[in-house]
Length: 408
Image (tube, rainbow, N blue to C red; front, side):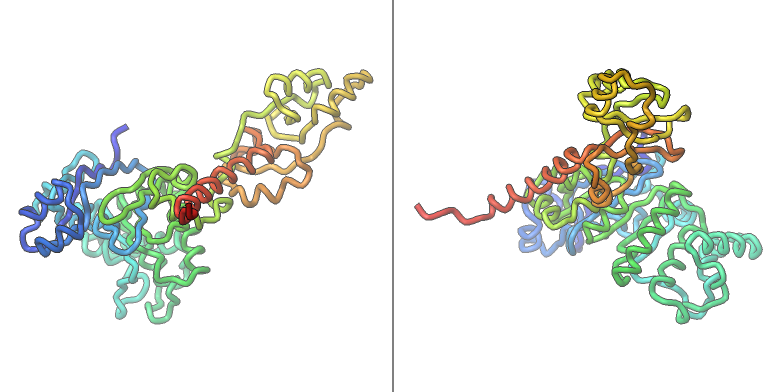
């Protein structure tokens, strides 16, 4: 599948002659520090290659100086890349002239900054409609679009308020609504929630994920917070000193770090709050509610399982029957399964493992259901513990590698 956004070998060097000696040294493998000392130039981004799929929330994460904000500013050419290309829907953005670039920014992208950048003398409606006003949209249509965007971010009723009358979180919602009002193909969010208090920040993350579930925009989201990256991103890119360290799903980053740098980050993450049921979901041993005990035994044998999930005619789970209880029922020639069924909780694929772990009181497998309540899999307690243990192993190995050697 052709990516929505293709970042090809993009490099950004700050200085008077970025494409001169500094670029030569960088391509020859010299470090960022060595280039700065010898040329006075600063490497912001170093040969980055990223593909972003349509409808994806792609998070670029890194500490201060990692190049993440420089990279997102290269996407819409607020910064001119020193080398490389940025291709969006087949259009080479780096080759656009000033007129076409202005149209591209106005019509194809929306940007949300860390600092809200609202006009203090304009009310909320006017702030949100500003981009549409620049595009020449008539007042009635732009006000309607602004009010629709405000409804998406939960600010209906605040249209006539001014920024000074709103909390920080509400002001950031206005900034997000302003970006959404122009209906952009791509939403660029540069540390959008970093200035907010932790509780409000988490609420904004929830709202962003809810909005994304409705609109399916292509989002490039910049953050220095790994927990935020793992929470909102469908994929995460970890950067350091302008270069990419690893790209992967949150589970990949957390469970399979490819460098010591990434492993050091994930060591302090509460993996149970990041990993979801989808990581540990298995195909379930199932029987119909009209089945007999021998059918349960056949189902558990075929899956090497200790229990089978019972489903109704619509495929919705009714509970589980253990191998042991099915064996006893078969031995006495019992008819029907009603008395053998034990109730178990049901979760969806996006449920965090920390929550699932709390549901394992009976030690029985939990049902995994889809959006219609139909059984799509099973989760065993031991599988959850095994996956969480794998992440702990990564941390322990890293800790051992950093420990001083014992004296000989």
